Image (cartoon, rainbow, N blue to C red; front, side, top):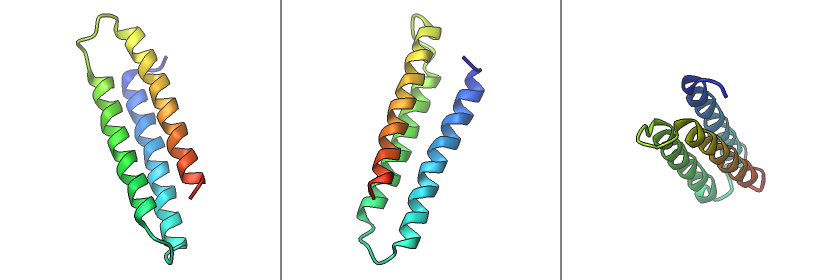
Length: 88
């Protein structure tokens, strides 16, 4: 696995892409109700905060195993967010 710094950077970039895609969708479809896009942006930010706090948690017994689990959580959350973005 890459370094923790790289993991944080990748998470930041991926969540940023989801938020950017959501904002582009909101601008292109300005006549639609923006509550779904606002909710997706809020959920993306909440997911980012949650995942960063998991990455920064140093009080775990096996840090390497914990970070692998966090990496899986990142993949799952990003998959869910992208799926929601695609369904807009």
